[in-house]
Structure formats: C-alpha cells, structure tokens
Amino acid sequence: MIDITRTYRTRCGYPVRFYATDGNPNYPIHGACCIEGKWYSSTWSLEGEAYLGSSSKFDLIEVKPRIQREVWCCVYEDHEEIGYAAVEIARNIKGSNCLAIVKLPIDCEHGEGLEDGN
Image (tube, rainbow, N blue to C red; front, side, top):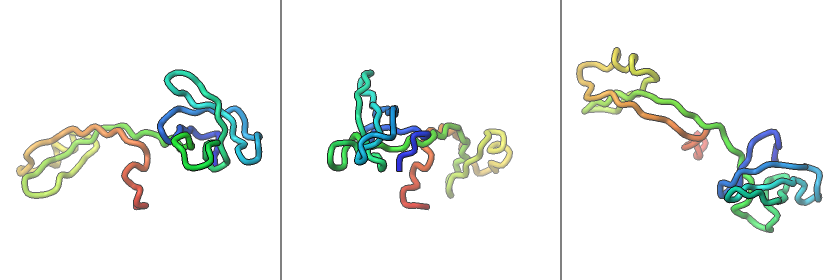
C-alpha cells in the first residue's frame, strides 16, 4: 500500500509527487511524474499501479535511501579480500602477505543485492 509520507518514483525512474489520496475509489492517489523537466498528472491505485490497466513503467516504486561510503580492502594472493571501514585499520591489520590496500567507493540503494531475501 502506498504511503505518501515516503518517496516514490515510477518503475522507469521518473520522480513523483502526490496531490491527493481521496480520488476515484479504484485510483485514489493523484499526483504527477516529472518527464524531461515537465510534470504530467497521473493517478494510481493504493498498490501503486498506474491508471493504465496492467503492469506499467509508470507504476510506483518506493525510493530507498542511498548508502554512500568508502571501505578499504586488503588484497591477498592466496585468499579472500577483507574489508575495513578505515584505511588506518586496514594498515594495522594487513599482515605481511598483503599485496595491496584498495579503496572501494560504495554507492548503492538500501537493500540492493538482497533480492533473494537474505
């Protein structure tokens, strides 16, 4: 069910804003989506389905917060890399068989890669 206190976009990525939630019983959510800088009015069901009859690129998808940070990864020849939040920690823990310490920028949506439920 759509919660207008949260942020949404269309399935194809257009930003959305809401005007009302008490419209037509089948499509009570009224608002607009921004396409190439222009706002176009639209209506959606309480489940976020666009007024187009079937699954559509204009259906609503909740925008999850982005996670942005960097981690430092110790790279070893014979085994898995190990990541640390700060370069100082990586340097102190690296060990003599560390080949490199690499900065990895993280920029992803909350829940990304967890689609299998784990």
